[in-house]
Image: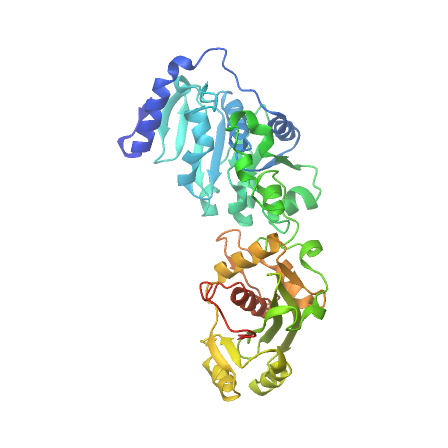
Length: 444
């Protein structure tokens, strides 16, 4: 097998040595047997131009992608593109199944789907694998979608498709245009995200007969997994089990507050807003900026260790005087303590003058999101149904498909949501490493 010095890494050397050691186990009668979920996806691929495998952890997505690639490449002079967001990730999944095989839990060796003797040239630097029958497997990252514009292939295969942008998706769909006996196809695999993702819209909501999504549960691939694999994941929340074990897409959260569920996390609780029921009551505050909206929430931590969001308040272009007037009505259930955003020092000074004690608020956005998601999953964060703005803002949040970061838009100010995050972070004993706090603090 010809290879260039520059593309042969120590990892390749180890994998090639392992393959060489197992060559004696590769028999002429070796064949791949697909499980029922993989077979369902294979059927979808034959009957639809665009097919997406939405699978749980270790559900066999890479195996079925590799099998389809091999079938296309078995026809002389075929052209197939294998891509994902970052080129370096290709070696770790589908290419592993194609080129090196693996040792199964029972000790048997599953040979590579692409026989070593079929490969003429393997060049990772220029991104291609050439077979002796003239077929070519092109390898590329697609973080820059313009890289695919000059490619014409019969089959486009995308790993971790949720990580690529919708623009890249559209560009790749247009690349499958080269005539082939099996037809021009686009196939992809992913771990599912939220139902606001463009892939769910295209493959499910739009009801286009050319698009088909199939869920591959982890349990369908159990014969290729260690006996205790699924048991080791039994501590997952119900939402995580649906996503990571069943391959189902999350109904709410849009990829940020993924554990939020109206049925489990919204319930009347305003009547509990008293010191008799609460160990601590706080007011969350986010003043936005300039003429933007300001958001407030009244939250508490009960003696049952649950955190409750009782009330919300939002006002555009609020003045400091109006803010202090609104705060004053709750002085009876709080002491004169404020946890405030140190970036808004003017507001902090106004509250200090009004005899509110001030301390800094949380700065770590992602950490506070994780805390909220954890509490939502265990139903330890409850929101009163009167907090309509807060609930709407939670459900409308999403992450960029390109960067994975929380996208805050002008259409959803998030000030009430941010105010709630500050309060929850404080009440969850995160801000002070679990040290004992005074009761009834005010959070900004």
